[in-house]
Image 1 (cartoon, rainbow, N blue to C red):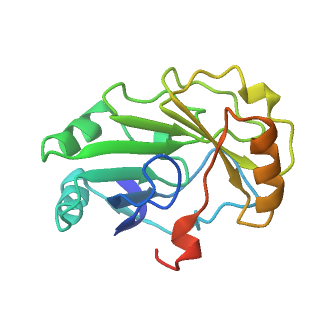
Image 2: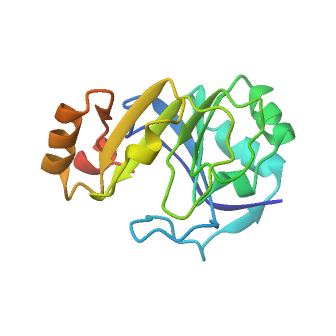
Length: 181
């Protein structure tokens, strides 16, 4: 059983796969408390893997995004393999503080203050920028580096930072900009 906040179909709104149709499995619960989190952690229902899979298979997208909360609290290799068994590409959005299954297809790590990184593979590093010193993230090995305004409130500051530090790319919450889930 896994605690699910919601399962829905939409376009990926952030990072490398922006614009890609995906089924989102939003897990409840997190081991960190971020002021800007958009998940109601007290909400959620316990679901079996079979019920989750049935819901995922209602939608035509190949991509599945495991998000939360912190999905690393709830998933294992068997769950990822179950999604692979129906030809899904499994992506995770994680704070990086939990060891993750090695059979994930894509790892988006969004490290947060107070969380020690335990992930060993990162495809995409996505930092929510609130004006903090992000030099600590420069040494993290990833294929792609994204800096994202915090709830769209400091976009000009993020653009300015990226222009001075061109390793980073801009990630916007396009799903919020175009008003889709």
